[in-house]
Length: 395
Image 1 (tube, rainbow, N blue to C red):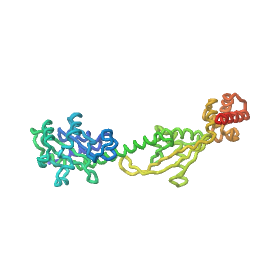
Image 2 (image 1 turned 90 degrees about the vertical axis):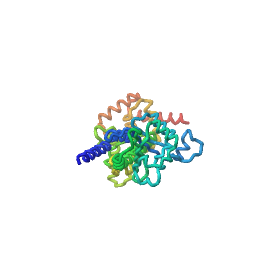
Image 3 (image 1 turned 120 degrees about the vertical axis):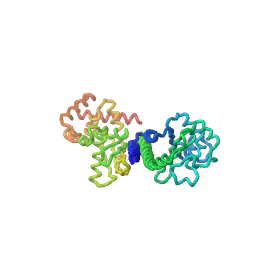
Image 4 (image 1 turned 90 degrees about the horizontal axis):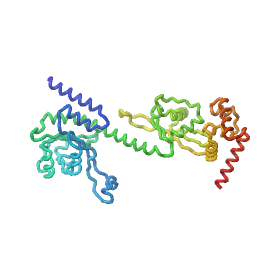
């Protein structure tokens, strides 16, 4: 009874550590099998069918018509060199008589099989010599299955002739834990696939001309591309009253302020696809928020939000930017010049930009000094002259 409880505790400890697996599940799992159950020679093999897309896009097979075939995509072994694994992958995998597609139909409902259970005439003579060169004679193979009962990999235990064949206890142990390993490995593959898809998406939207923000279900910004960062900085030049609700540790404080305005807008309008428009002196920014459903780290469904920011350049932008570059004007100074052109007074400029009258006066002083003028009339005249010169150059 005591011995049985000790084995149960060992199994529970194995499963507990298996759940705390690092980034790479397979080597961690094999190391635990070695540590807790004393298996010395262990290998994991996972294959997939090579698709038509893979065939015609590989350098070696380009232009050659071939039939789909199984290829190894994940191989790992305890106490075996990389060269030995590569040798198996390149030359002997096709000869392996214990791959799931080669075992006799009567074993198809079993998840654990001994090599001694299989007919000896199925062994390729070259493969037999290969195994003898490694001093391996006995194998216990455990097949892993996903929820659809598709084989997603196999664990191969090996013994030498001196060690003898595997016992009934070994078979029972591997048969018991195979279901637990299958479940965890299947979820590992699903999460890995989602991460790979996310990485592909990140690469896609990192360099496009549209700004993209990703928000969690509480409207906190969790990701942003470079364009969105630039657009949000430009938007906030005219939205200085925006409140940032982001954590002090967040690296998306600027984006969060824009996201707050956009999310407050859809909540007030009660529309999932509500648009928010921001106008600056040089452009109009349209923000569209779209909800989507995704899995969290615990595989629960959660709602995320994407904010797409598009920019439409105003017709005067080029002239104003040339004007700013010519006289080394700051963004705030250019915003004030734009409002002067619109006919705003100093008080109105102060209200629109949410700055004090004293700050407005200080900006005017800097503008007059840079342009070498003395007042608003001269400023408007300078703007008109610069615009006319730019139009003449374009003609």
